[in-house]
Image: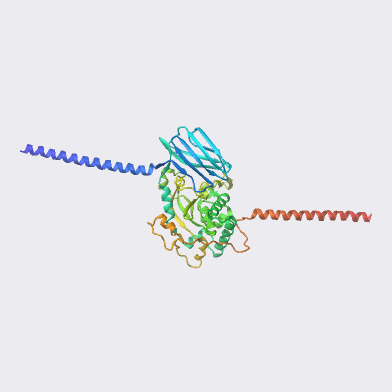
Length: 442
C-alpha cells in the first residue's frame, strides 16, 4: 500500500515539475520573442526604396532603388549637379545627364557595399555636397524609423511660452529700451532681406539663406560654455556668431517680422556620440525650426545648411553652403533629426514683460489651446488669421546688423573720390597761380 502511494506521489511530482518547466519555457520564449520584436522595432527600421529629399521644386532629388540599380532625378536650378556617387563603395557604372534648366537624371550600378550602411553623395557646381543615409541588407534601402511622423506630431503640440523668455531671447540686457532697439533692428533686417518678396515660401527661403550665409557657428563657445550672451539676437547680429539656439532665435524672429508662422524645435541630432540607431533615445543636443505655410509644415535648419564656423578665434568657411535642410522631407530629416519639443515664441510682444503682463500665451493659430489627442489634419485646418508683420520706425538707421554697410561704403568711397579730385584741381590752380606771380615779379 505504501509502495503504491509512493509511486503515485512520484508520478504527481514528476507531472507537476513537467508542467512548471513547460510554463517557464513558454514564458521565457514569449518574453524573448517580445524582446526581439521590441529590439527589431528600435534597431531594424522599415525598408523604403524611394526617397524624395525635399519639397522645393527647384532644389530636390528623387532617389529610387530598383533591384541592383539606383535611379536618381530631380532639379537644382541655380546650382546644377556635377557628380553623384556612393561613399563606401565604387560604382560599376554610372550615367549623369544635366539639362540647362538644372533638371537631371542619373543611374548608378554600384558594386557590393562595405558594411551595412552607406551614403549617397550629390555634389553641386558650387561644391556643396548633399548626402543621404542608405542601408544594406541583401539589397540597398532607405531606413524608416517612423521619426518622420513623430517629428510632425511634435509641431502640432507647440508649447506656449512667456514674455520673459521672449525678452531673454531678444537681448541679455532686460530693459524695455534694449528689447525695442533689437526688435527694430530685426524688423529692419527682415524687410531688407524679404520685404520685396510677395510669396511667403520665397520669403522663408530668402531668410533661411541669409542666416546660413551670414552667421558663423561658434565652436569656441560650444567647447567652453554657452551663455545667454552667445545666443541672444542682439549679440548674434552684432558678432555674427552663435550656436544652434541663436540661429533658431534669429531665424524665427526675422520670420515673425515678415508675418510667417514659425516654431522653434528642440531635439536630438546625430553626432560623434549619437548614431542613427540611438537617435530616438538620444539627449537633447540641438535646436532648429519649422514653418507653417499653406497648411504644410516646412522644416528649416540654418545650422546644418551652413559651413561657416568660428573656431580658435577665427571666422572660417569649411566649404559651400547648401539648402539641403530647407524644406527637407520628413523621411530625409528622420535620418539625423528627432524632435522632442516645439515652442511658439512671440518676440515682438516681449514688451509685455515690462508692462507686467507676463502670462503664457496660447498658440495664435487656434481659438483655444489644442488637446494632445487632436489629429494633425484637424489642428492644421484650425489655423486662423495670418500673423501680423512688423516694421522698423521710419528713417531707422541700423546699429548692429550693418545690412547696408557695403552699399554705404561704396557711396562714401564715391564721395571721397570726387572730393580728392576737387582738391587736386585746387592744388594745381594754386601752383600755377604761384608760378605766374613769380614770373610777374621778375
